[in-house]
Length: 209
Ligand code: B1M
Image (tube, rainbow, N blue to C red; front, top):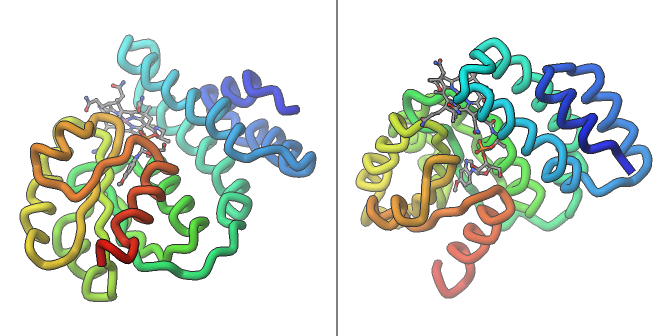
């Protein structure tokens, strides 16, 4: 079994090679990739964020940790996507305007693809025009991610824009809550990536379409 503590520390320290080595070893041993995320990589990002709040880490440290995390995620993506279900619908996902955080958004996109959805990744710093372009390509749901209290407010504009069009808008990201989602009239909220898949399943289930 992988040394989750070593994985966590490698992500925090931004040691890409070590992260790659540990993740490759775990994959070769047939380990559960979700455990790598839940016990190693995601808590590492939480820890580096806490250090940042306490002024014990700065933006460059956040960046190198994020790069190490992305290196690990690139390796586990094929495993997360291996469930083999057929395309069930089309989802647009993007981090909202003003916000450049993309790790959580990428994770949600990977899980949605793994669950059989076609995903249009609108990237980061997404304004309404970018989501709209994805809807023109057939997206039935727009998933908005935000990591900043200053950018989550843009979700209200996205929700308002798509109200009454038949396109559903769902929201998530660290500062976002169910209460906030209710307040802005979003069609759904999820705390994490697997919850986002369940939410999309529900919204696109026969009784809702
Ligand atoms: Co920034 N940053 N950051 N950062 N950063 C946070 C978010 C922060 C909480 C750190 C802190 O102060 N403790 C803080 C925000 C404070 C606030 O708003 N209240 C913060 C800040 C302040 C900033 C800057 C302003 C710093 C500065 O420049 N002074 C700046 C802003 C830049 C910008 O966006 N305009 C900034 C920059 C950066 C980096 C570029 C250095 C880097 C991002 C790199 C990248 O993403 N490529 C970075 C990082 C890495 C973080 C932390 C440390 C980690 C975020 C992360 O990747 N988490 C973060 C601290 C923290 O979150 N504790 C922090 C792991 C990821 C898997 O979790 O994204 O929450 P998360 O996604 C989860 C769920 O939220 C959910 O599912 C995911 C998986 O379970 N989810 C969804 C996410 N999106 C969803 C969408 C859905 C559903 C679920 O749709 C339906």
